[in-house]
Image 1 (cartoon, rainbow, N blue to C red):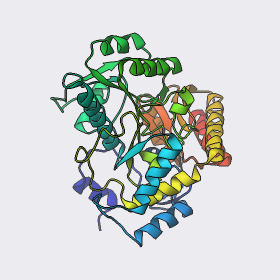
Image 2: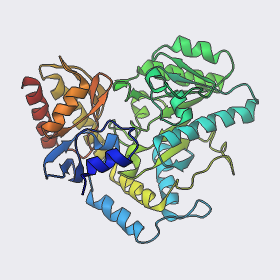
Image 3: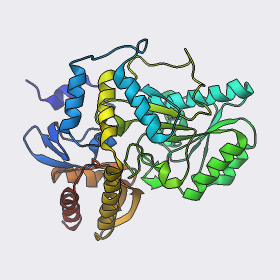
Image 4: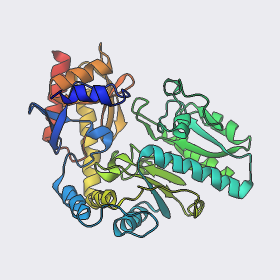
Length: 389
């Protein structure tokens, strides 16, 4: 029989530049390849496995639901779906939620909501959405257009209209566009993940919030990567002292299963009424059962620990000779390594049993929020040894 790698290369579309690694199982922060070699995973499936691999309580919750009801369409009610909506809204102070299957889908829903909100209230001609240069919002046509990076735009022309990009921190540029009267929303990532793990300036974010309030423009915050405890708060916007009109979630919310969520404030929660939006798989009972367990785990002590671990990780990284430009928030961390590329450093890490990610010129770390201090120290030791060689 051919190897899994050979089968993959023959039959799977070549849209991923895979590393030479086949993982077969995992527990907690540790993963194991086909030969039984152990790896410390600081990627968490790009921030998805917030509780690590196969956390037993999560597995039990998902398995119990799997044995009861695997899927029911959104033409009917289901308990896991309704309870997750209740928990999310009570936890965040939002009025209603729409469930999708991914971050891109959640952002699509937010874009549709913003345009319909403006159309319902003001009619045509107010559909523009402002996003930031260096942002990343997904790979569908709308979310790709919203993404402020030319590198993702090639080949797919023509794009949807009515998107404008401004440099992060340039509130004057945002004001100039909003003053034209054709803007319905401003869409931000509070930490630009794919763009290099770059947190936004707090004063800029607060200024955007005020401008949106003054002009009745919706503020959308994309928390697909920063949400669900990743930064040490349930929502990263808690660090910034703002609340968006619309917040999107995905990744860590399902604990390892695909889910997206669009949280809407009372101001706009009735915008997407009957027939305005939908999803066959959105709010699937099994996925919601996993998400309900994730939310139950994330009490204040859990989030405080995640924040403290993130600060510890960043401090210790900054002490390593050869590590530069450490950035991030909580357990969303980026850093540069002197005299090497991020891609080469990640490849070398895999050889040494450490799984990391890239974000442009930076190495990006999104470890499980359950990582222990001993496991952080073990990872730091490997990173240090890679630099010292």
